Structure formats: C-alpha cells, structure tokens
Length: 170
Image (cartoon, rainbow, N blue to C red; front, side):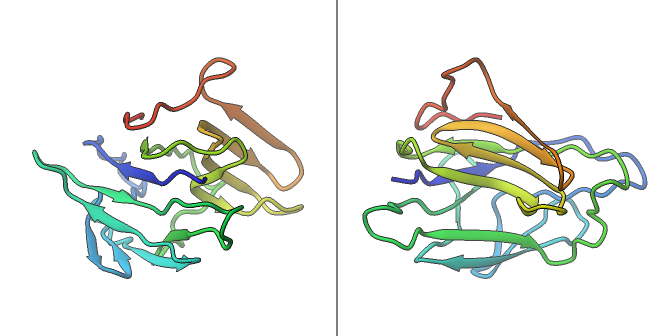
C-alpha cells in the first residue's frame, strides 16, 4: 500500500529581494489548480492518473493542507498519482542561485516497504538531467540531488528512522 500524504505549510519568512518564493499552503483555486500563497502567482496545475486526486482539507480549528492519493500499486494497478506543477516556473531554475525547499508532511496510512512517494521534484532521474527532490520511501524521508552524472541521497534521521502515522513532520 502506498500511503497517502498530506502536505501543509506554516508561516515562513519572506525571501530576500530578488529571490522567488513558491508556497502551496493548502488552498485550491478550483479542482485543477492549487493556489500559490506567496503572492508570486505561481499557482500549481493539477495532473492526475490512476484515480488520484489532490484535495484541500480544512480541519476544525483553522489551517489547510493538501491531501494526495494513496492506494495499492501491487494489488490493483495503476498506482493513484497526483502532481502539482507551477504554472510558470521559468524563474525556478536550479544552478542560478541558492535555494531551499521544505514541506510539512503527515502520512495517513502505513506505507509498504517498497512504497516511494516524491513530495516534490525538479528534473528527472536520468543521465545528463539535473534533479532535486524531497521523497518518502517506505516511510523514511530523504533528499536527493543529482547533476545528471552523480547523485547524492541524504536520508533523514538515524538508521531505521520512519515517519509515524498521523503525526506532522517538518
């Protein structure tokens, strides 16, 4: 079973002048677009497959988060998938300046040991293509960077660390 993942966002400091911010804090403009609350208008376009969806959840007490699909990829393929792509990402170019990325994540069901979920990603895992991403594989978060030739994978926490179901992590 691939666990569904919820992504939220807390208040973050504004970026320095000249830098670009992108922030999806849980608000949908409509079923096909996620609002960018940074003020830069980089609203996200939603693409889905295998029955996946992106929904905005507003729990009692305020706040909002985006909920992505979960489901089995081995019992009933295809895997439910959902992707949010910034509508205009020409200013989000790796290698042109320093950058930081983060997410608040909560798993809502146990992941299988072979479950892989990309929380966010730029580029692809292929020769000659740069990539950076935050992922949760088998319940353990990690960051991956590649220049298209060499890749570095940095897992979070000590060996055996995994995300507890129902708890938010930053």
